Image (cartoon, rainbow, N blue to C red):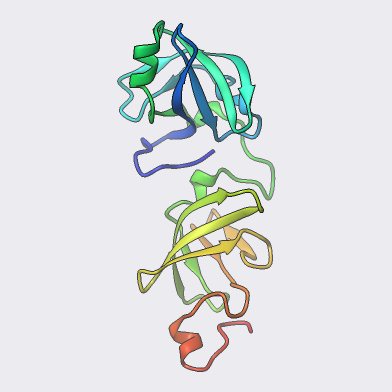
Length: 187
């Protein structure tokens, strides 16, 4: 489950409508839940503004999501008009993550530090493009960086402390520390 820039406080994005499905108002939803059908598991979903709320009924699956019927949507034109709409559920309706698990939305916006505690940047997002999870960060100098989201590259996630620690593989990130001839903290 992800956090988008528009995510209302206290909500988590569970999917995004990517287009219509059929002629009776069905939509295709790219899901951000562990199981694609989980988009319907937490009760009604709402849009970014909270002005629209829908009951969700899963009617089929496809490679990156599910085909669903939304309450109040009964024709293809209405379904088409919802393309790009992110779907949210209240955070307190979701199960608490297990130890060493977290929701992506918990990480977005957290400061990232080198192992020595110096500032690295801010977490922008997490994605899986097919070769494993990656974490996207904006460095302190404003440059975007993508790191593998592994224990080696992200050895510590401190949600209580509101930070993560990153230790990028050697040569992957150019920094002032590396430019000064250092290999980066902890290297």
